[in-house]
Length: 96
Image (tube, rainbow, N blue to C red; front, side, top):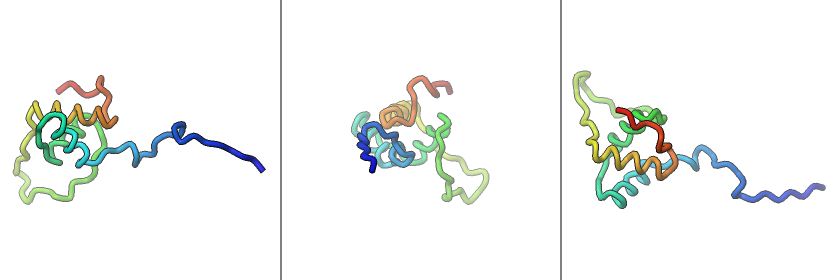
């Protein structure tokens, strides 16, 4: 018989634990910056930074439709939230 003691602090996070939900990101941006952001804006910034996002099943009906682009102020707030939840390193992705 072998007895092993493992401290939970020593274990790595699973991929599910390390991902923040869009709702958590929205809440952080609202609380810290007083801005409301959409899932679309969060997704745009995540793509800009090379963070994996799920497939979009809500596609536009016409090919020439345009998506609103995230304003610079909201982009900075979303980046701050992504840094806060550990999805973005401060040194990464500040080039437009």
